[in-house]
Amino acid sequence: MHEFDLIPELAAIMAAIPPLPVISRETVAAVRERVTAAAARQPRPDVHAVEDRTAPGPAGDVPVRIYRPLDASGLPVLVFAHGGGWSICGIETHDGLCREIANRSGCVVVSVEYRLAPEHVFPAAAEDFYAAAAWVAENARDFGGDPGRVAVGGDSAGANLAAVAALMGRDRGGPRFAFQLLAYPGLDALSERPSTVENGSAPMLDRETSQSMWRAYAGDADLRNPYLSPLHADDLTGLPPGIVVTAQYDMGRDDAHAYAEAVGKAGGAVEVLEVQGAVHGFLSYYAQVPAASAALDHALSALRAAVAAEGVA
Image (tube, rainbow, N blue to C red; front, side, top):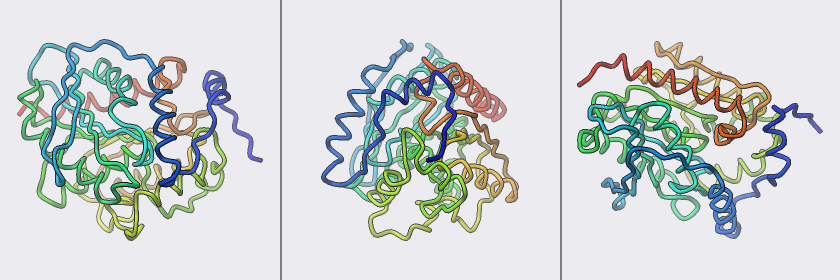
């Protein structure tokens, strides 16, 4: 079995967490309960204001939670998609992380409760998140945001949705997002790059569970559809700048580098931050793992620089 030399603080956390089970219609409810209970133990820092609203979506209203770090107007905005394999997690599980991002970045954070698989298959999550992001771009002033400085981001499956929203915005003549903040994104449902195999038994998320999540979300869709697997897009020109945070022991590590390289060849600019000794999902442990906190700072510094450079609309 492959040895994973984890950051000590992260190793201690992983030793206490059983790996996520395979996702199916039969298991998903129990897994949702488990991750919700685990998330309830995470810190939830105070922010200036939190407001629950809805954005119009393709199949009805999409719940969003708006975190305002300051009593100010004209702030940059990050529209955030939570991870969880498109099938588990939600606004509540990522509440602490979104609060921390708002405080550290100075951005209004808008967390999106998109529809989950397997009850709602592709493209439900992608269309919900894009609709919410487009609504934010139109209505940012209502909650202290600057419509000219709206970024998209997320972790894991949510980072997939953020990358897809950047593609959709370009393709549909929608908002020109200022930045894409992608934490260990799912970019290629068919990936056979070396890290997919090398890290297939890594802590937190193994290959069998990962593939079950892709299947639950994809349904009958072509796995090469670029709105499902952004690395299969024929054209990656005209995308926002961004950063991809990945981990040495994440299956998607090589996909992250491939995406940044492909966007770069298409004239864009995506930085990769690869954190040694880390695994999928590590940013959520920013309060216990100094290396995770440092990576979050690095990513949010890149976000701040990009939205500052955009200019106020």
